[in-house]
Structure formats: structure tokens, C-alpha cells
Length: 225
Image (cartoon, rainbow, N blue to C red; front, side):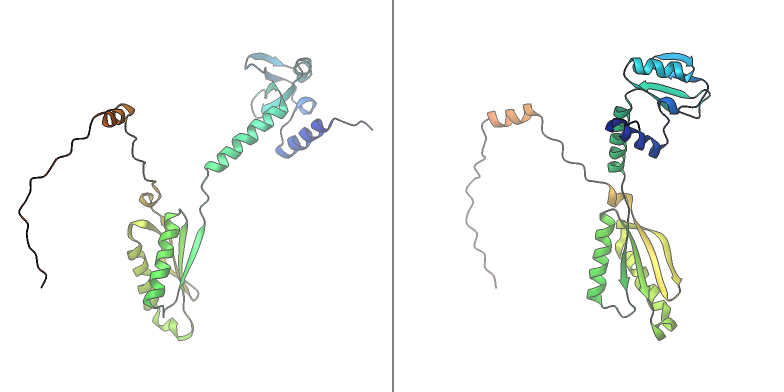
């Protein structure tokens, strides 16, 4: 049984997971080779390119398998995976995950509860999440569905510029719901005020402050009846 170094076994598992062919796993008859400095070495058989890579203590990595011929690069495969994972993590950080927060109403909702849930919906929209406003009819309330539409439509009007309607109010079974998405105005962050130039700050500190002394005015008597 031949034991491979631990780092090599780790690389093999990661390459199998990401379906990247390296070294002796490259099956094409001819490949276009790029060295570690970005210079093209031309079209070579894989065994010749692999020989060059091993002489330099590097790996032969297939970076464009669909090209004709496939393109391979001589490089440190462990460093290649590290840089790729680093860029993937940076891309995931920049991605904004939008979730749908549900706000539930009832036909008999009172004014205080309505205002509380409306404020919740506005806060969710300002945070960049979508809002699903749902209202469930129970029993005989189905005969008065217009009351539910009035509540949901009022919510849409009260939210105003904080959100836009993605799905207008509609019935699904015994539930009336609408979906609102954050508007661009709500998502746009406020730009910080530009700092004052250092020269202007220094001049304001160095210059003596001129205080205007107001002229004495005659006292005015006021009375509150």
C-alpha cells in the first residue's frame, strides 16, 4: 500500500469535489500550456507538460477543459485552491440575502395592533427584506372579504415609498396576501458628509474668533394672560 503525503491527499479530495483535473488525471491528447509566469509554452502532450511542472515543483492544472485543445496551467495547486476559496468567500460577503418576513393581520385587527405591525413591515423593508402581508379569514368572515382587502390596501398606502408592491393582494384558499419589496430609495444608504479640508480647519483654529456684541436694547415687558 502506497501512502501519499497528507497535503496531497487533501488536494485530491478537494479536486474530486470541484471536478478539476490535475497532473496525471488530465486525459486530453494535447493541451495548451501556460506556465506559472503567464507565458504560453504552446501545445504539448500532457506527459511533457507534467514533466515540466514536476521539474519546477508545481502542478499541472486544467483551467479550461472545454477549450480546443484544453488549457492547462503550471502552478501550485494548493495556492490555486486557496485563492479561489478566498475569492468565493469575498463574493459571498458581497451578496445580499433577501428573506421574506411575514406580517399577519386579521379582519378584526384594532388600530393599535395595525400600527404596530405596519411599523414592523416598514422596519423589515428598510433592512432590505421582503414583506408578506397575510390576512386569514375564519368561518363567516369569508362572506366579508372586502374588509380584508381594505386592510391590506391600507397597509400598502401607509408604507408609501418604503416599499413597492411585488404581488398585488390575492386570495389563496382562505388567506389574502400581498408581497412588498424594498424600494431603491429605502435601500440607498445615506452618503456621509465630506470632511473639511485640513487647511480650512487649521485656518479656522488659527484665526481669532470675532464675537459680535449686540447693541443694548430697551427691556420689553411681556405678560401672559
